Length: 140
Image (cartoon, rainbow, N blue to C red; front, side, top):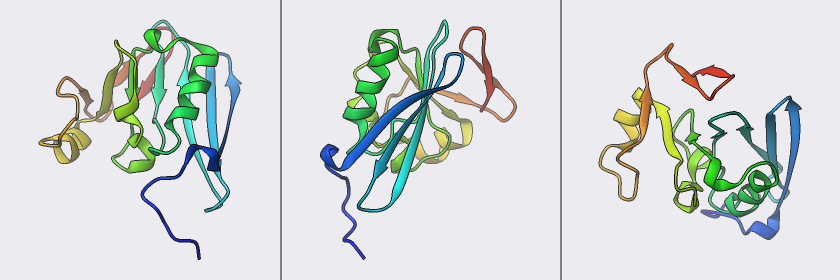
């Protein structure tokens, strides 16, 4: 069994992007060492959203794929559905000046309170609240 490191080098990750449906993209990164695929989703809309940033060792390649569709300056929010390093490990590297961090209210209360370098101005949603990105909406 391979030794598990805290992150992986970007050279170890093969990242691709594909349009799943009109304006919704799947960004997929395969780490051969572990035989694991990590997925993020980009919603291209009036207020574009990135769902997950991936693990810390993948974010630079994920960012490259986002830039193939939109500029980082247009990204309105980055959402994570639960608090694990494969969901938001790359958040520190997010260089999008307008993007707001979005998560569930429970994740906000349990996981983000008191952590160093976590945006204080994040947006939290209760169950059944809706994230509106423009033409599209999503229950968080």
